[in-house]
Image 1: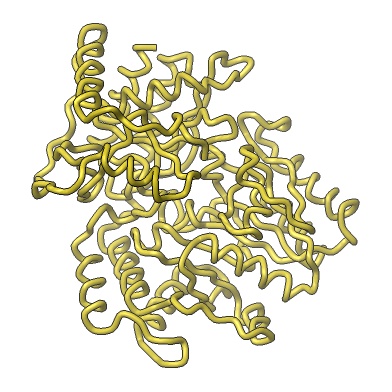
Image 2: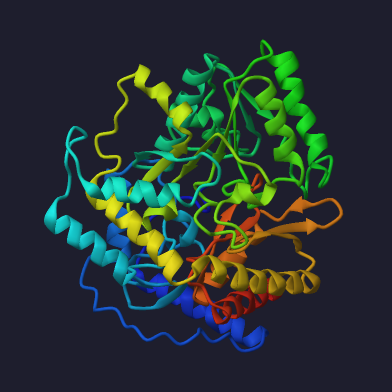
Length: 472
C-alpha cells in the first residue's frame, strides 16, 4: 500500500476542523444536500486522551518511518461500535474498509468481547506442552467449515505467519523449493511471503530464490480478459521452462485484496491446480482477506471457483481484531511437520482461540454470510448504477462485501485516476465515510466493511461517493 500523502505534522487542530468545515461548505454550494448518515443508537464516552497532532508528533519521533496514513489530516480514532468508528471529538464515521483489515463481526461485538474477557480472567496463556480446551474446540469448529479432507489446523498470530508456514509445509512435503505466485498478489510482510508477493509497489517485493510470478488473470486489465484458461498457460510454461518440471506449490488469493479487489478470471484456478498437481506441487489458498463469509456466496473465496486446495491460510477477520491466523491442511500433509520441531509460542493461545471461536459463532448466529450476500449484491448494484453516471469509474467488481471501484481518466485507455481518487477519499471522509485504497496503480477503492453492514449504510456510502465525484 502506498502512502496517500507525504507524512507531515498538522499545524493545529483548528486547521483540521477548518478543512472539514470548508469541505462541507463547498459541497453544499455546488451539489445537492449532503447525504444523511443512518441513525445509530450509541454515543461513545468522552475522550480525554491526547489529540491527533500530539499523537502524530510522537509517532513521527518514535515509530518506524515506514508508517503510512490515510488522509491529509490523519484521523484519531478512539472508539468503535459495529460498522461505525468515532474520532476524538465523538464524530461518527461509517467504516467501509476495516472489515478486511481486521473486523468481521463489527467493532466491539459484545459476545466476542465477553468470550475474550472471560478467558482472559481465567487463563491468558499456557505453553504448547500443556492442554487447554479452547484451542481444540476452535480447531474442531474451524475444520468443520472446510471442505474435503482439510481437517488439521495450525494456529499462528497473523496472515504473514500463516502463509510463511504454508510455504514451508509445501516445500517440506514435496522436497522441492520452487513456488509459483501471481503478479499483483499480496501474501505478507516477512521475507518469504514478500518474495511470494508480486505487488506492483516494489516495496512489497523481496527477491527470493525459487519464487516465480505468473501472469495475473485480471479480468479488467489482463490481455485475455475473462478467459482464465489462457492465463493458466503461463503457469504451465513456468513449470516447463522455469523449473525442473516439479514445483513445491502454488499460492493465490481468490480475490486480490491489496491488488485492487481483482477477482481471478473464471476457469483459471481449476486449470492451474491441474498443472500444479501434475508437477507434484501443493495448492495453497490465501483466504486472509476473502475468507470467513466475506464473499457472501461462499464461506471461502476459492469455493466460487470449484476447487479444493491442499492448504488454506486465514487471518484478519478470523479474530475480529485479535492477533490470530491459521493454516488448515489434510492429515497426510500435516504429518510433514513432525520432521521438524515446529511450534508457535503464542499461536493458538487460549484468549485468541476463545475469541476466534466466538467470532465463528456470531457469523452463524447472525447469518452474516447471508447478509454479506444480500447487502453486497445491493451495494454492487448501486455502484454499477453510479458507474453509468460517472465516466471516471472504469470498473466495479468483487463479491459480497469485498468490492472494488476502479477510477480512470479515460475508459478506453484505462488511464489510472491516481490523483482524483485522493480527492474523492478526502471528500468522502469529510462526509463521514471511510474507504480503503489499493490496486496496481493505487486507483481502486477497496470497499470491505464489517459483515453487519446494511442497505442503509450502502446508500449513504454511494450517495457520498456520488457527491464527491460530482465535484470532480
